[in-house]
Each structure stands twice: as C-alpha cells, then as structure tokens.
Length: 291
Image (cartoon, rainbow, N blue to C red; front, side):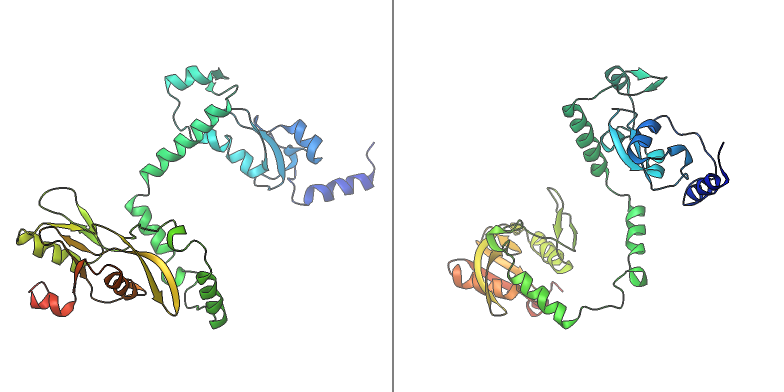
C-alpha cells in the first residue's frame, strides 16, 4: 500500500514540469530505453517537454536522444527527412512496414547520398521572392537588433587590428582574384548572355560602347597588385571595368573612390606601365554625353 508521504512525493514529482496523468507515447519513442537511461517514463512528460528521450528514426531506425517534444514532432533523422516523396523505386528499396514506407536499414553510403541529395535539391530551389521580402522586412529598421546602436571606439580599434592581422589576406584569401559584384543590375547585350554590372554608370557606358559598335569585354582580367592603404601594405588584385578590344586599353568607370579602390588603381598604374587605362569620372562621362 502506498503511504501518504509517498503520495505527496509522487505529486511533487509530477508537478515539476511533468504531465498530470499518463498518456500514450508514439511508437518511435522507446519508453523502455528512456526509463533505463534517464530514469523516467516518457508517458508522464508534457507534450512539449524538453526532457531527453530515446527515439528511433522511422525510416532507418537510427537511435536518437532528443527532447520529448522535438522527438514527437520529428519522426525522421536529418538524412531521412530529406526524402519528401516515396516513389515506387524507394518503396522497393526501403521495404514496407506497417503499411508505411520505412527502411529496415540504410548503409552509410545510402544515408550520405540521401542527405546530400535532399539538401542540394532544396538549396537549388532557393527562397521565393515573397520569402526574401519577409526576411528582409523582419530584420530591417527598428526590427534589426543592432538598430540605433554603434560599436564603442575601443571595440572598433580591436576590430581593425584583428582585420589587419588576418592571415587570409592577399593570395591566402578565398576571394583572391575573384570579383565581388555586390549591388548592381543586369545589362542585356544585343547578343550573348546578360551581364551583371556594379552600377548604373557602367550600364550607361556599356550602352555607349554598344551603340558605337565598339568591341568590349566587362571585367576582362584581374591583375595582382601590392598596394599601401592607411599605412599598411597589402597584396590583392585590381580589375578594370572594361577592356576595349580594338584599342587594347582598359577603362575604369568611377563616380566615387571607395575604400582602397584608388590605392589599387595607383598600384596598377605603377606596376603595369605598359597597359593603357583611362578613368571615366563624372566630368568625362558628361563630356561624352553618357550622363
């Protein structure tokens, strides 16, 4: 017979984030192993409890240790959750258990194939434009956690010094010799594929060349350069905007020199004196009627 004291202890135990009465546990959650490992029955946990339980993937039967609420909601492991549609081929490959397509076992190679293929196909689809706008709006203006805040001057100094010591600069950088297009817009030539250009001025200059039937190539080549900026020496690359095929010269369209852009340009002029290059700034763009 259960004593009054035992009854009070049992009540306290159940009230400490536990359910008020036992409930049915999904088949993929192993109650016996949970009791052996964690000392409590999943049947007394609240539906969204974060207490760990032992569960098995309904596809490959892999054992997992997750919160009870998460285990109830997610019946498959990560790799198997990539399989969204069970085709006839999958049914014959994985077999049938209990009227549902489930895997008795999957090899490591099969699990890897399923996981990679599913993730790759999903990322290929990307976000819809509607989703992109929602994500942008949810992190813009006052909704941005950094809204109205600024780094302290001491923090900025530490950030600058850390950036200077970054060993992945120059040729060690993943972006060495590559072009970061950033903001811009598409230019649609008369023939060939569309070209992503950095600014509206570059678009206007490309139209100017195209109308006059001047052969050109956009960002034709990147040149390794060593340049000084803010008292420090760097190695990087400089990529002129246009290459004019017939005259064998490069054109830089520039309304404003940002960051180390002008330092790279000067380094290019000094280190490659045999290459012809012109800068089309606002004055020259207006002079030729481009603006």
